Image (cartoon, rainbow, N blue to C red; front, side, top):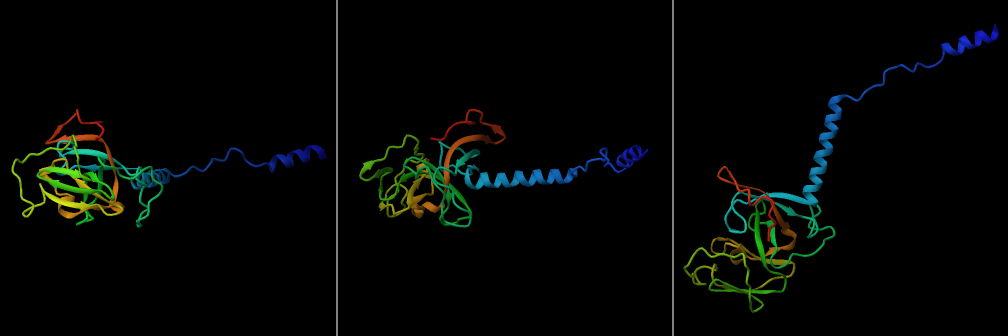
Length: 220
């Protein structure tokens, strides 16, 4: 009798195993997923890659109005937010790189141009021809859409310099040489103002028409 009573008492105090498990609220799950996605997107945008759209024709015919591109922010060393310091870099900008940077006269705007002169170079323009350190700089992407020559005293478009590129600065020009507002007019670009290297077109749009042949093309 004592043994049976003991068994009955033990079974009556055993914990219930069929109690429902409390589930995480659906709204909380979605909120956490969105927050994580936003944080990851901000990290990628700040340190790895960022999308840009071409608003003007200064880089024609390399880049056209309506081209959408991705910019590699990692290659030159991404900027630490709210500072002028960069994390580890792969390399410095080189002559021929197509870069995106803060426009020196209005940092709220981003410009895109090609690097012509790096720190220490001497850049000079003579009647639409550009010389770097005394040698003709032959860029296969440059185009001239104006036939007239503007005197240096009137405008630096066709004849300028010589200009020695300062330390940690870059001389940049648009491929559409006659219709580009660049270092010939407002000077060089500081290294800390460079956002990254433009490397691929991911979309191209022209007056409601898709330029399918441009999508996926590397920028050279």
